[in-house]
Length: 244
Image 1 (cartoon, helix red, strand yellow):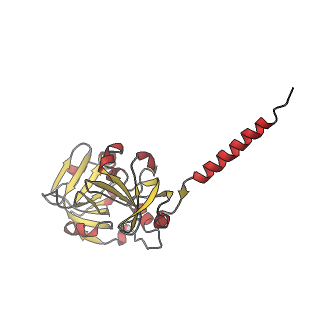
Image 2 (image 1 turned 30 degrees about the vertical axis):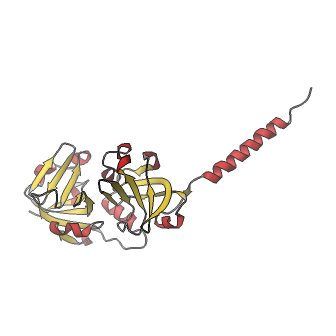
Image 3 (image 1 turned 135 degrees about the vertical axis):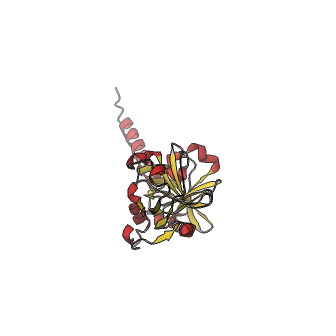
């Protein structure tokens, strides 16, 4: 009877070859700030989304307020239905891990997301100060809330991507059940708005639309653009101070 001594060697060869193939195709983990050095390559990046904007045609998720220089994640409108509702709100101030191919568009690096499997939330919520720190991790100095510039609500549109105190009187408030809007002008479609999601209502001592209506307040947070107007998303009552 012949001994089949070659069979284990064949299996071993397949195992080694498969392992080498898997190793060679592993996605490269890179610093999101260095993405432009990996144009054309499949990579994995991790960081906090500190700015988000939805133009209606595309949603842009940014790791740094200076989106013209640093990596952007892009979701086109044709793929919106695959992602959580309003991805610009869902991913904002969350730490994410992203995989995809780095491409250049108008001189800046991008990763185009066509499937939610490309982006994973690593940390559900990052405090505004922490998110700002993540954006300025490249040796920039971050001021604490007490040192941050205070502006009027009329100036908010000039401070996109910046963390500031915004001051003004709430003249209108609306709670849809899913989100509460605090408005500083009757024309809320155009002017600065404070946004509080239902998941954070329980943090406030009273319904926000009652607590802050007709009060002069100042609000701390990252000013972002949504549908052409400035807003700050508030997740904690510590972000709002009542002046009178």
